[in-house]
Image 1 (cartoon, rainbow, N blue to C red):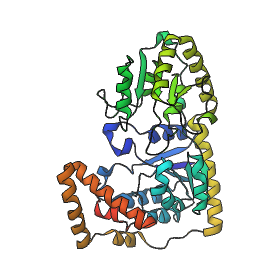
Image 2 (image 1 turned 60 degrees about the vertical axis):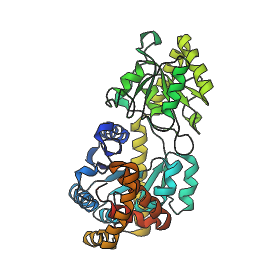
Image 3 (image 1 turned 90 degrees about the horizontal axis):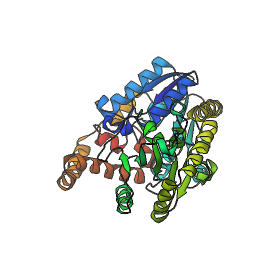
Image 4 (image 1 turned 30 degrees about the vertical axis):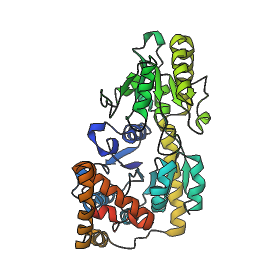
Length: 396
């Protein structure tokens, strides 16, 4: 099959942050399954002069390639709902969106764009009922996984280079936690955006995890703790995972046998010290975690299920709705144009934000304020060509 992947190559569309999780995971897995993969860059706004151009190029690629499946990961409102509808009417493409961060993003994004796709996925069991409640029945509960290209046999602790490492962005309270560990005599080698060492390449990350006696994972997010890709990547790379607990984690690994978990800083400190002086226990868990990951948690397994679900959901969708498109792309572009009132409103909002936070952060803050207002008061319209955030901030 031909699969059109619609998401960014880099984290949040920013090359300075390194290759994105979705690109590094989904594209190789789909190719290993024997599919032809076409990638469309939808996150890096520098590639396009406006959202109208982004959507026009996207539609042209769908028309030219006529993919069997369109697998998207939307950040926010970059792909218009009208454009998706037009793309679905061009051929037999089955569209599915891999939703991220649904513990908080469902309220702001997923529930509004879910019905624009034939199917959606979520990695949060507690959110499935919300999809059904909001009239989005074609939802697949899935999870992140490990890249089979980076599966490696574990190294014994005695052969590891880093006693303790952490790979991930320095956001939230992570810097404070690392400093607290250091205050207790535990040095942690940190890699990623916001740390002094900076981001590392996608190719280097598995090697760092494999060469670490302990690989830390913090599961903190804007709401409850989350299971992320790192949960599977560490044991898959042959590392030993010591992770903050997240709901449903026990469905994928057995704590104290295949990985280990902590619930607070005191327990984390105790367990780090324990495994550093009991390397045989660390080695046993690293081996068991690697074997389970290789057996159950690779992206080939996940992607096969996602594609099958997308094709089945498309067939169900067409029986109910048929192929339909309410307007042309040119009509959508007309709705996207900004008038004098919008320009004035933008200036009135951007000016104080820039004074407070500076030019770059101030403009981002202004855009965020408009987005927060829009999804609360206009809901689904936010993700259409006429949505306020995309019209007022076409360059961001």
